[in-house]
Every structure is written in C-alpha cells, then in structure tokens.
Amino acid sequence: MKEYYDTRAPEYDEWYEGTGRFAERNRPAWDELLNELAGALRSLPPARTLDVACGTGYATRWLPGAVTGLDQSASMLAIAAERLPYASFVQGDALALPFPDDSFDRVTTMSFYGHLEGAERERFLTEARRVAPELVVVDAALRDDTEPEEQQERILNDGSRWTVYKRFFTGDELLAELGGGEVVYDGRWFVAVRSPR
Image (spheres, rainbow, N blue to C red):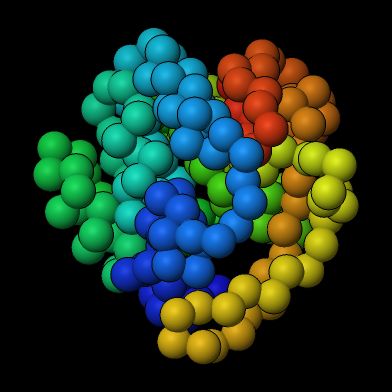
C-alpha cells in the first residue's frame, strides 16, 4: 500500500475538503461533523502523542500536546512536516514501531485501523500498547448504506485504480474490540474511542 499512499499524497486532503473527485459526493453535514470530531480530539488532555499513519497531518493538527507523526510514505510526511512545523515526523512501519517501550503517553490513529486485516490488526495493537498506555482510534462510522467490511476500488486523479480493504464501526463495537475505555465521539461519518492499556 506504500505506493498507493505515495501516489495519493498530493490529493489526499481533497477527501477531507470535499474537492476534486469528492466535490460531487453527497455527504450530509460533512463539514459540521468533521469540526465536531476535531473538537472532540482537541478536548483530550494534552499528552506526548504518537500519531500513527498520520498521512498529510490533516487530523494530526487537532491533537493536543507534543506530537510525533509516523507514516510509511515519505510523500505524505513531506506535506505533514510543512503543515505542522512544530511537530516531529518519522518514516516508519506502523506494525513495527521504531520506538522503545512507553515512549509516549498516547498513540492515536485516524482512518488506519479500519484498513487492517486480522494478523495486521493484532500486530498494530500489540505495538501501540507497547509504546503508550493509551490508544485513541478514529475511524469510519458504520451507516445504513455501508457494510461492516468491504473491498473498495479507489480511483486517483491520475486514473490509477487501487483495491483497498475497509471496515466500518459503531463506537461501542470498536471500543469492545479494543478492550474497553470510552467513546469520545460517535457521529454519522466517524467514531473515536479512547482505550487504556
């Protein structure tokens, strides 16, 4: 998937901003609900945070405290570093985090966990729990018009086509999967949960 995200990096924010290929999508109250999610994340207590699969840093900027972003894509990280000059960024593997045990207070990840299948999911959770005592996962909400999991075809601006595995969650289902904690946000488009080690 590294090639997909390297290719997608220059257009990634179009998904958040509803521009480009996403301009014609019908996403009721998208901007309002995205702002609600941002507010929920900003209201977390400040912490030394590792944002895994930070991409362009679009959502990383909502995280309070000292933030380190990690992504496998150098193209994504270049955009993130320009957007957030006060943060640190590291190119690395989310399933083998290049940090010692308990390096952070919190691991966050947005729109990443739902792309992981079985064994990858377990590896990520083991690594996230190893480097921080708290995990915050933000991902896509399960709605009436989505299946709990699917293979999506994604078409980029250059016309290339990619198949991506994707899961959708309710807040309570995601929380149960992570082993408990609290639902931080539960909306039409996103859910966010906070789970202690």
